[in-house]
Structures are given as C-alpha cells and as structure tokens.
Length: 95
Length: 325
Image (cartoon, rainbow over all chains, first blue to last red; front, side, top):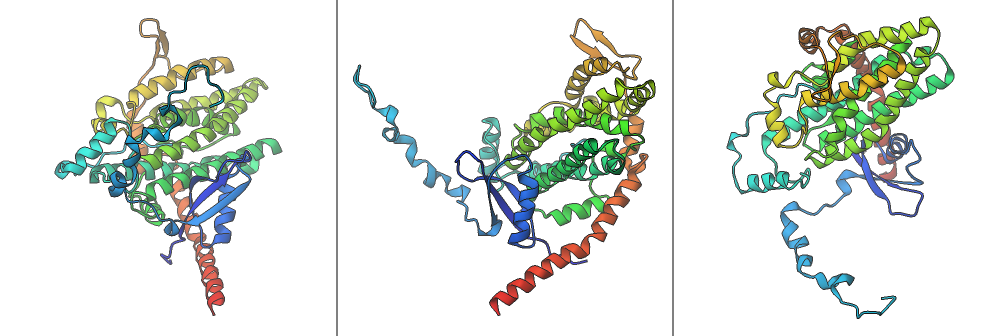
C-alpha cells in the first residue's frame, strides 16, 4: 500500500454576516478541488458560511513563538494608541 | 465520543530548563499551549495518546449506529441518523487534525489503531441489537461524552480545545435525537416500551464505565490534571452523569438497572452501585462482544479504500504534470 499521504489544508469560512473569513480547521485532500469539496462537507453542514477558502498548510507563513517578545511586546506601553487614553472634557459629546 | 484509560507518559524527568518554567507558567495562567510552543516530551506524548484515542473512538463509534441506517423505522429517522453518523466522521477528522499538530501523521495513527497499538472507547465494543439501541446510544453514550468533553473545551492545548468547541456544539444534537427516539418508544406500544427498557438495561453499565476506572485505581489522573488536559476526575464526571440522567429516565418511565440507586439527601447526589469492572478490563483488553468485528470492519474499510486514495493522488499528479508540460 502506498504511504504517500494527502497534503494538509487549512479551511477558512466566511459567515453570512459580513465578517472576515475565519479559520475553522484542517483536512487532508489530494488537490484543491477535493479540498474544497471536503471542506464543504465537513465544515459547512449547518449553514456556517457563504464562502470557503482552502489553503495548503505548507503555504502558510507563521510567526515564530521565539520572536513573540520582539513582535508583540512593543505595543504594551503604548496605551496612547487607544481612545480611552485621552480625557474628554466634561460635557463634550460625539468624540 | 471520548477517551478513557490514557496512561500519561512518564519520561519527563529531564525537563527542567528555562523553557519548562515558561511552559508551567502558561499552564498556571491558563494561556493555551500552541503547536509551535515548547512543551515537555511527556505532555506531547500523553496528549497525542489521548487525542488519537479520542479520534479513533469517533471513527469506530460510527459502526454500531451505521448498523441501523438501512433499517431505520422511517425516512426521517434515517436522515437524522445519517447526519449523526456523518458528524462522528467529522469529529474524527477534527481530532486527527489536532493530534497531527503534535508531530504525527494521520496515517500513522490509523496504522496504530489497526495494529491494536492504540485504543478506542470500550463502549463501542457492545452490539446494537435493536433500533432502541440507537436511542440509548444517543441519550446515554453521547450524554456521557458531552459531560466528558465540555471541560475539555478549556483544556491547555489550543488545537484540542478548539476541536472540542465544535464537537460539543454538534454533540447536543446527537443526545437530543437519541432521547427523542427513547421518548417515542417509551410512549409507544407495550412492546416498544419494553424495547426501550431493554436497551437501557444493556447500555446503562457500559455507559457508567465510559468515564474510566475509579479514581482510586487511576493514579495517573494527577499528572494530566496538573497539565490541564483532564479537568475533572473520573468519579466526579461519573457522578455528574448519574445525577443528570436519572430524572431523564424517570421522565421516560424507564427503570435504571441498579438496585443500589437512591437519592442521598445529605450529599445531594445519587448513590449508585459498582459496575462490573472486570468486564470493563476485559473489553479494554480486546475481549468485548464486538472488538474483533469493529477492528475487522475498520481494517476492511481502510484496505478496500486504498485504491481510491491512491487514484486521487495519481490524478492530482497527472493534472499537475500536464499543466507544466
């Protein structure tokens, strides 16, 4: 029996309400067409969405956990990037 | 469905570097562990065992119910059961995918199942003798699974927790459809009522045993609980199952086959009898009523389907080669 395995695909679904495609899981399929069919069968059986993306897992470039500090720590002391940083004078509206 | 009797790996003695304390800290702060994060080898191996056992249970669990697909009493029941069995296949897929993030392949896991190196839940080694068994499985077996699985949506390993969220949503449908079959039978003719009672009689104790051996006998719970890949003890989950199922049986007018069952005013829980644990261990060892049949069916499906998997790959290769030619 062949030990060639079907590649892994990541599945993204967009719900009907205008939100972005969201990662919902993975599956194995020999090609894009079968990946799409399988994604439809497995991940949209209960009206979960109106659009599907399938992406080969190996095509996804992910950030390295070891680099988390360099990548994600900087914003922690930049609270001025949030509207709540600023005090609005009493009585001023629509800000 | 779900796991039982997972023996945590105990090769972790050497893990004590700075990475280990980062890992422990995440566990303590309930930050999920993700596939690319450092994790102790024993954590990885234990999880792999647990998730793959869980996945195998979903796939083998399709067999007892599929037994009644062609003989469902109405087209509606057949459609519902088909949808349920299809869900179980999906659950297997979510779980195999979660396990694969730990660095193994689905093919290797399936080989382990077929070569008896991996286990699946003992419950699926019991036969489905009548249509009422389909009801009892949905009500009791999926009911027990929900109790086991809801806490796992909060477990420490991200991909496993996320798979559980999806599974739990679908599992509620499974339990309701099972109970609905039981309601219909219990309120039907005396023969139908007797059929429902018979199914309860046969599925009750195997369902109670689904939560695994008593806490006193499963010393390995502790490590898994510290790692937050098991959140409640076997006995605690079992008590919850009994407490919530008794009123459901009462509503059906059916009798739980346990002479020791009684409400305990002091503990505010039901007291119940001791299952036949020797039967449990026999089934786990491969000597249940259907162990050979179930693995035989899985093996046949896997081998008979091999040419389809190969043909699909060959087709992909041909299309790709033509495109580049």
